[in-house]
Image 1 (spheres, rainbow, N blue to C red):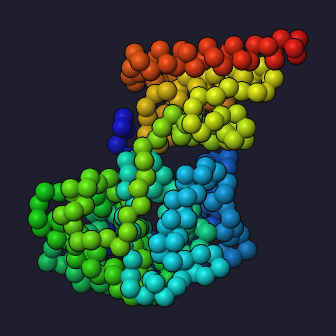
Image 2: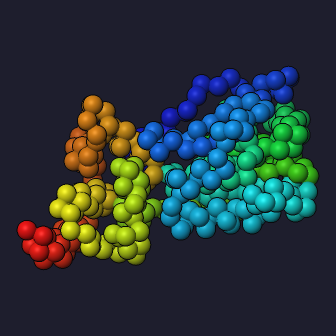
Image 3: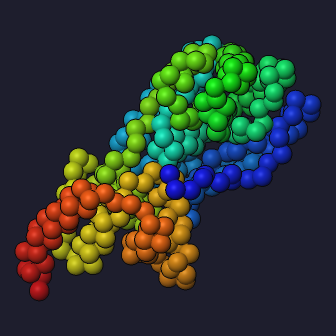
Length: 330
């Protein structure tokens, strides 16, 4: 990954003393999704605005089958659905690790499920976690608040401690996992863990795997960010570089440019960062794939010789298949 993921807010630590008053500021309702801004519409606090809450807003962002399958896997695991908000299965408490590299959709799934279930997210940062001597009481209090507010706890960057070789750090996590096994508590752990690292921790209730982005997934992500996700299903195959069947010359050119930048092996976070850079580079104009390519060049992002050759052949095939239909439109 090219950029360290930024903290989205400079929040004070969450202390045990007077925790409820502080933790209520961490409650976030995922009430909608803004397509133009490419971000979730959220409300803070105990109550959300019922009149503007859309529990189907996740569909504006999640369009690929893989992410939908992981959402369903999570819903099945925690025993919840929009029609049945909580089942008896959750009476045992649930710790679910969402395991995969950065930018593979773990946070997206967590937000989408909260939106669908109309339950607030209780966002906990790694710097909130106290030292070993205090963590047991702290985690127990946090679990009780999550149950009281019917919130899903999400541990942000907990793997910074989970991957530690220090036994004390692993014990801090184990005490948290145990506390979140309280009846009615659901905790999600988006993490980048190996099998060996996870084996050193107290067992989670379940693990959901998020594979690295392949070419098709990167292509789809770029199309979504450019607001052309309508082309995902109709233009590209999910298994291989396919060719457009449209006759619009501008669309064909756009798709070739998308194909060029999709061969760079970026994770989802990097794709978002380079898109943000392209928007700044474009100024008042709409960003284009050419702006992204310029940013990739400025950052000297590598593309292997093999990828260059395969990309050239894929682009050549696209052009050759476009050419007859384009000639018929002239």
